[in-house]
Image (tube, rainbow, N blue to C red):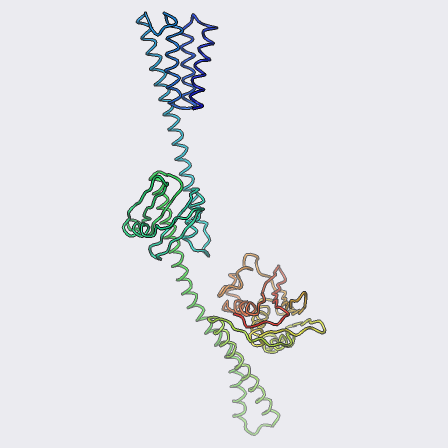
Length: 476
């Protein structure tokens, strides 16, 4: 209404100005009317330009064609000029409006292409740790500013929702679209349900509400969703294959490692018993020493078997702790003693302040955790450097720091070293291991309501075990 009023007002202003300034020059007046009509057509559209064209023709006739002051024209040439002016005005306004509409449609198509591109990039950058279909629905809602998005995955028979509004009661239609490739539309609600196809086979269904979009854009969205779902399933399959390969590799590595670990005490036991059998009348001191060696190595062998059983149990089952109040420093020294073959001449310094409080912990499990971390420090630091174990109490927490002077852990790997089976690519072929030790230690500490963290830089790495000083109950 405002635009129409402005159009009428514009014709009136031009008419008044022409009567006052150039009443005897109808040609100039006609060009003024025509210019005004063209301006309206290019800025506002066909309706406003058409109204101004009709009004301009009537005003031109009434005020500037003889007889002035009447809607009649005596000269036939003036009839031709008048209708030519009206036709030119209408055609120009129509063409201008069409050009504006085409420009607007081109901008909308460009925006649609940009949104499809943004959606395709979002698919490539999605987090693999979260459900992929849910992320697809969420990104689709954000990129296209939709009120509601519902994605039905036929393979999983699961519905994923996104957007500020809720679409309820669409399960049957979504399932029908995913099974038979049908499409449902509800124009008043700007809602559409379409099948998502991979090739010619429907694999899912998609419900969108909030924005009306061309069929080409809708089909482009469906194709990108199909590609995203297929990519997610391909990645999942790749992870399963990788896990299977890693499991097989782990099995082989564990067997090799266990064989190597068991071989040392068995060799010592065999050597001691062979020496005893070869010379039965040797002095009692020699027999006692050989028997002591055999006994110690048998105890070492028993410890290895117990550790292997513990590792296997902790790797696949929930951890239940049985806390006892005890001396944590004493437990640390017991761990060092159990690693005497690996310690050899290494300097391991234990720093514990006097009057250190007793702590509630599961002796067997926490010793295993400390052993895994300490063994890691010994393996990844030079033989001629010391390893420091420092115990402190601060603000109701007990901290146990194990620091080595190795080359350090790269920053990008520090968040992954507690993952099961993860081993640094730089040390994979240099230091034997299974990638389970730190993961098991982390789970044990977490079961104690504590935490295991790492702080590493070139030349120094500290693993910190944090435990609550207060008594704890059973955990998982």
